[in-house]
Image 1 (cartoon, rainbow, N blue to C red):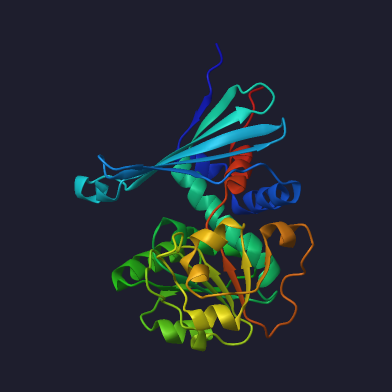
Image 2 (cartoon, rainbow, N blue to C red):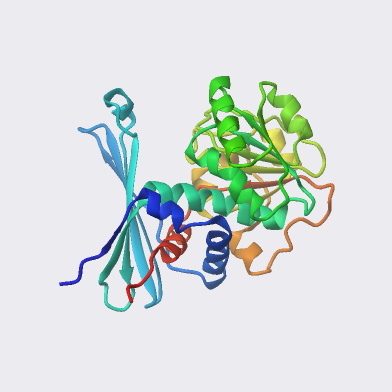
Length: 305
């Protein structure tokens, strides 16, 4: 009887170095995959949500991420989000691996931002501002360092102690990192601004953005959430990960009609050149994609023998 490989959080992290993961996600968008809109089921009695995110690439590979979101879990001393990824053989349906979904999701999210930034950030960008101090935020410097010569990292968080903790952790990883409390001043000096927060109201004002800045928006995954104001979106050339962002991302839906320049599909396939001058402002808005999950799972899984 075939038993799928069980891959825990630590091993998932070890198998997903950012250079390899970014390359795999780029290849995934070039090749394409079937990725239906995620299935969402509200669990009213339990006060939670069940999400199912499937994807498959022909007969080569298939998988599904199962996510549960229980916002009240913090009161129980438990994580609000739990997820697991099931990777299957695309020809036989045989279960190949059960992978820690939280680590896979965080890493592919940071990697997708860096992948987009490889097309959209200035080639000489060295100063990264991380807005937020959670798990995804903690991975952003390493992801960005895989595509740009990052030599300075500033961390801002709505709770300054969170920024201080993350900056200390990043220094332990070898980054020149500091925590700061003046977000406007931070945005004015950074070349890449990468936001991974749960903000419902804009944190980034468009008037703060200087020419040449790349703004990366990760956190606003619902229509009632946003990290940047309307002026920021209208001053910039805006790119998205997939068309799902057009319906799900408050940064887009609340800004009114916007001309979307392209997506990860058009960028990775060379159908759009990305940044076209050092002075333009660019924005990448992502909500996540099952294509990224499938690509990441393919990197994690190591066939026996």
